[in-house]
Amino acid sequence: MVDKVIFDLAAQMGIHKLRISVTDGSRLGCRDMHLVNYASGSKLVGGLIHQSELEHWQKGIINHKMEIQIRSALARLKRLLDSQS
Image (cartoon, rainbow, N blue to C red; front, side):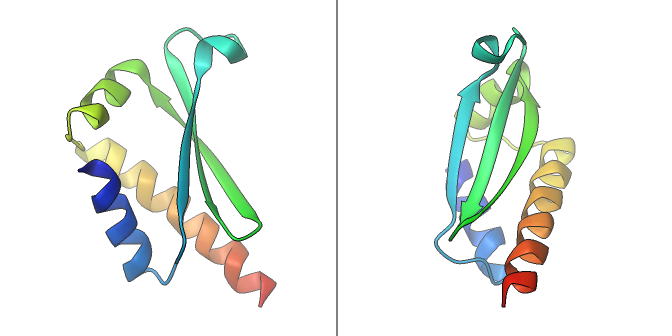
């Protein structure tokens, strides 16, 4: 459900074929953080998300802080895609 919201936001911003991946932070040395990657084409941007926020995400809940982080990441990705053109 949350992924659909993110894909809809991306589409509104003109980002198509968005891919999202989440890397377990413990593999990176952070027990309570995870790396979220947003990619389209050959461009990639990342962000961090706390364990509790990830649990909310998995339940279909996006709080205001998460929405700002997602929009910010998508805006960075959009700038990269636009500079490529």
